Image (tube, rainbow, N blue to C red; front, side, top):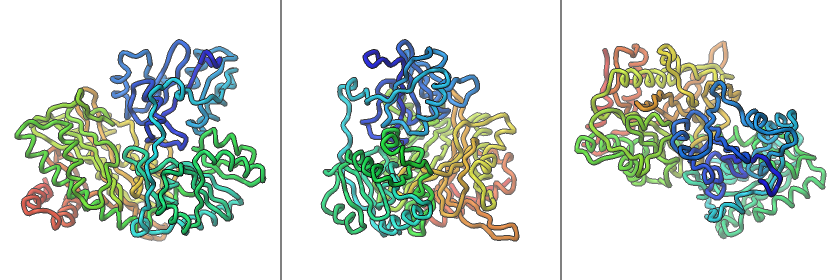
Length: 579
């Protein structure tokens, strides 16, 4: 910073593709701060430093920042300054704030620059400082891309590209630049292994009216993939050559469309001719086709079998002792890996016992690992990547005696999850309008949670997928049939306990009336919900009815796939209950 006359530097959590989960090569924020959460920004001045992160990571960040000089700033909490506000308060007019344009989106860059410039501060593009200061920096991954068969994808890459070209013609655009890795993979029916738990590969894609070009390191593409791409009308060019090709496009005065998530480096090359618009692929990918939906159902069946085996094992093993958060994590992986079409986990398993469960994105390690006892609650959030679908499920498991407070909180979360599951809503509804269904029961007790209630789930892709969400803050994307979305309310009390119950849902048409089309949420996840934690007096008849119907559905779907012993266990766990 001193050698470049920079008084502050911003270190994001992202990569050149605005990924939430990224390859180790771009984990500069993790390396410099020690904070391992997936979301957060570190800002460094010449005499101080701060980390901004959201409520999922407050407890984790406090622990991981102990002993450092980095101050934690809790986003969306009153009196927490924004990054520009903090910089303005600590710097003087004329000072320079450095940023690597290739690892920051143009929308973030513009927002920060607008606020800083008013106070006389300059936002300066720099080279990546981690190239020089991170001595053992991991290299950019070189894993092979592979074909995602049409029997799983449902629509050919050639047809997807044709649909995008129709969109471009309608919008009057000559060229579309695609930088999000899951969008590239979905468009081309390819997958990879460059990002932990996310089957994507490092690349860009440019589509124009006559050609499509994949920018990828040459050694990541074997002859089979090369031949396949040629058959779909896709050219291949080395990853770095996108820069010179974009300059050629600009020199030809072609109209370029880029998403707001495009990195500042790419945008700087095309800004003369660029329009920032949402990527058309976001909605195309979010609205699953019939083959993808069938794949989700099949993947959930196998995942449900693994979960039944896991829950049965946990209940029995904990009574015998010698189990821990880490042993549960290992068992979850083992049982999923025994299922057909399993490729890997969709995210690192969260197995939090007692107070560890209050850390929303907790991940056990040798230091934090708790032994399990026949008391209290275990929060287990896990998922699998299968060739035909991606799963995401949370169950809070009752291991023995729990307090009345724990029972109440468990039941409030269950009520929220059921109330959202039963929602029917008109066409044009966004996830923000549904969010209160999951929260209203706990609001009456003065309780809330700070994370979103639901996110989209990719089809053998990223477990977190947009553009739709269910959350308190406004997300305008409307919910439509074919979208997957999680339903995962929770309650977290630091130092005491945490509860979350989650199903992945599919939006389907419910009915058509004189008032238009109405939609509902159909459960994809197949797994019993632990009834031992329920205060049954807190459930109304509608909630009890839904729970009983869901458990009947789970038993009917999973029991034919289980051993007699497992079937008998599931029968007990899904037996009807009432007041």
